[in-house]
Image 1 (spheres, rainbow, N blue to C red):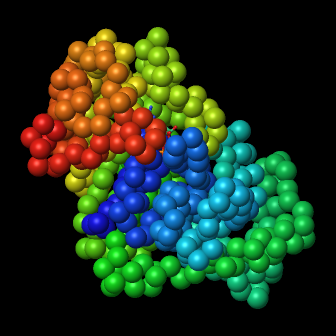
Image 2: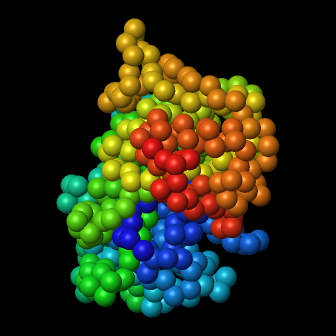
Length: 432
Ligand code: GDP
Ligand code: IMO
Ligand code: MG
């Protein structure tokens, strides 16, 4: 398999976990490169359902090697719980799951700060974060006061952490937020460090040794392009680079070793949390998509906001990620829809936008310009090949490929592994 980066091309929850699981069959290594346990990646195999937050979705294939890269922020308590959870279900993690010693650690004070900032947002509007401490941890990383996974193995770890907890307590007191018991926290994390030690490694030579042996690497993105700290709808974003560039900085994989970039898109759009979403539906159609698509957060259980497919977003995502091909998921969710709309441009303040505006304030005022497609009104759930799909469904997909200038190589018509079609990129039907 070619070395492949897989990214979300919308606002997250595009079905990345499912597609990673499908592709992991052909890869030797699966590497998560950013985000933390704000992610929730669902994989369904037979009657089993797994929701992975930090562990790469490749773990469900026995024998595949998995790495939590340096760009990830790791809540070590959450990671140990997740490891215990999968081990209890018969999945071996020792010797095949490694956490980069350069990854930054999430501590309880990060979560307290995240919660406080959501309660009392500096800019007046909460972001609607997952409250997993993600923003404050990346903040500490950039401010160069973070503690890294490798520090857990340092004889001075207790002092390092003590100093950080004391400093953060001062900040929390000033904010009238709850504080942490210093010695209790230090004792807890010393025990956590001991348990996590067998998983900690310098993962960069591991990945490079693998490539020297012609093994292939699949890089698993979390969140999505519009949640990227640089390219997303700032400030309503997460705090990492969820786009393909983050795959390099978050893993040690150089750009010239990446052969393919798969962008995952739903056949419609969803968003969790606050922030602009031009194609959002506030009507019965939005409810229908939420119900049929089970659009409730895999991490927080929050109902996801639902809307039509947005070509402005998809074209932008194709550009900034260098998407070579799309994986289109949740096609089956549109099976009953009479008329399917696709946003081709925005109108705002008397101006037409073909490209995504930088400002979230402008985007919030943008009105979508729609093109309509007749629904296929037939179940696609049992389709196994492109030919099994109704003609109108193929026309819809063809339009998505044509209007984004990017071919579709994977179609997903159900949550399970088997409900996946791999398309011949040379096939004219879904070509750009
Ligand atoms: P991720 O964060 O991108 O991995 O996506 P999530 O796991 O948060 O959300 C995707 C949801 O859609 C999960 O519940 C998946 O099981 C489900 N899913 C994935 N692909 C399909 C599909 O093609 N059809 C349907 N109906 N559900 C899907
Ligand atoms: P996966 O990998 C969807 C959203 C939150 C919030 C914003 C910032 O499952 O696609 P954060 O806790 O990261 O500071 O929250 O980002 N968010 C996600 N939305 N899918 C995710 O991950 C998300 N991770 C964060 O809802 O709006
Ligand atoms: Mg998710």
